[in-house]
Length: 390
Image 1 (spheres, rainbow, N blue to C red):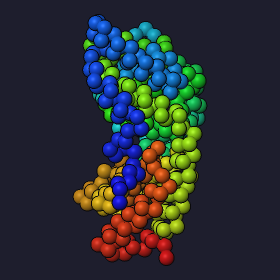
Image 2 (cartoon, rainbow, N blue to C red; image 1 turned 30 degrees about the vertical axis):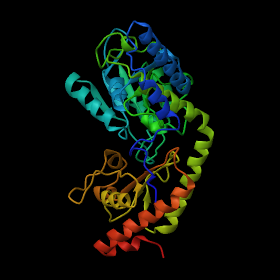
Image 3 (cartoon, one colour; image 1 turned 120 degrees about the vertical axis):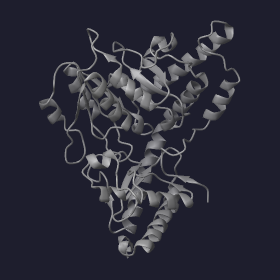
C-alpha cells in the first residue's frame, strides 16, 4: 500500500508545479539585493511572487513580508509592534489554545519586558468568550492574538467579531491563519486584522518561508536586523526560489479552492461516520463546537496516542497526536488541557488533519489501520477491546 498522509503537520507535500518552479528558480541563484542586471531580474521575480501571495491574502503587496516560518511571524507579531508614541504593548491577550510559538513568545515578553500577559476566557464549547473580553478590557497599549482554526482540534474562532472589538478600543489584532489555509481565503483587506500569519508549508508550498501580513500604518521594529531587505523590516538573504514556490502554491490553491473545500467536507463526513460506526467508547474533541472540516481529534479511552500513531505508521498511515505522551509520561498538549481534558483522557488522542491531497479512498485504509492498532494494544492491555462496537 502507498503511504497515506492523514496529518498536515507530517512531511510537507508540495502542490503540483511547485517543485518545477523552484528548480527553474535555482538555476539563477542571484541575490535579489544585487545591483547588477541579474540581481535586478531576481528582484523583479521576488516582487512578482509577492504580488501573487498578496492576491491570495487579499492585501497590498507592500503589506506582505517574507519570513522563515509561521513561528517567526507569530513571535514578531507580538514583539515588534510599536504603538503611537513608540511604545510596545503593555498587555498581550491570547487564547489558551494558541500555537506554542504564541504562548512562548508571550511568556518571554512577560519575563524580559514586564509585559502583562493574560489568557482569554473560553466558553463551554472552547470558543473565545467575547463578552468576557469586553468586560475585562485592560486599556492602554494592547495586542490580542487569536488563531482562526486550532490545528489540533479544528475549533474555529470568531476572529472577525473579536478583531472589530479590539480595533475599536485602539488595540492591535493578530490572527494565526495557518490551520485555516486550504479551507478559507484570508481576505485581509476586508477583515479587521492588523497582522496575519500565513504558512507556506500548510498550503502546499515549500518549508523555510512564510508570511507576516502587516496592515499599512502598523509600525513594526525588526525581529531580525540587517540591511534593506523587505523594505528594512526583516534582515537576511531573501530566498527567491522559496518565494516563487509559495506563489505557485497559492495560485494552485486559489484555482482549486471550491473543489478542495467540498472535498474536505465530504471526507470529514465519511471519516466521522466510519469511526462512529466502529467504536462505542470514543470522544470527538469539539463535537459540539464550530469545527473546521478536515481536522478531527479523537480520544480513545485507555490507549496511548503515541503508541497508536507508531502502530499506524508501520502500516504506512500517517496521523498525529494531541498529546506528548509516551508509556512513561501522561502529559498532554496545552490545548487539550485548556479544553478541560485530564492527562488520562488526553493520552488517547489521535489527530487527523486532512489536506488537499486526500481522497475518499483514504478513509477505509485509515480506519482499518486504526482498528488494527487499537486491537493490538487492547490485546496487550486486556479489557480495552470493549471500545469496539459489536
